[in-house]
Image: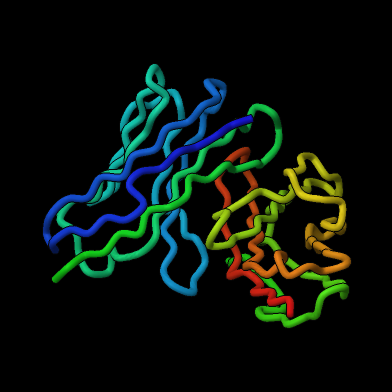
Length: 114
Length: 111
């Protein structure tokens, strides 16, 4: 089955700098890749997603890139702010199977230092 | 629209007992998936229901079961609780083939 590896496990950046989190997946059939942000004690919230027919997607300070050949995708956060501090999870799934099975990476704890 | 809701939010049980958790999806969403979140194993898929049918199942023992009702609300049940079942149980609902929205979770503690 699908396996998702996420790096780094912790990331600390200065406010205003950029942060990059990377994930690799194993199943070439996977075609949907969401990113979730989870603040302490709260639910995972979808922040951005990308499908395999797209190489890059941007939403304000957040962008995701996908390299299908290498089977990896990355989250980019620019101009980081203290409220970006949270745990970020990448995931992969193959919706063509008709099921909603998300396989998650282990998470990255992002800390923004003021 | 109201978001995904889960009840109860917190539960404390003892080993050997059983527990039932409930999830109400976003209105119009027919798919409900369940996940277990622990510090050691991260987020792991339990099962997914669509139109009252289980469509997919993760690698959990048979003590973990679920069901979905005609109004799309879902329940999961864990029988013969073990200490290792202590976790945050999250459900997620979706209407399309992929985008899932999570509920706040039920924090289960097994003593």
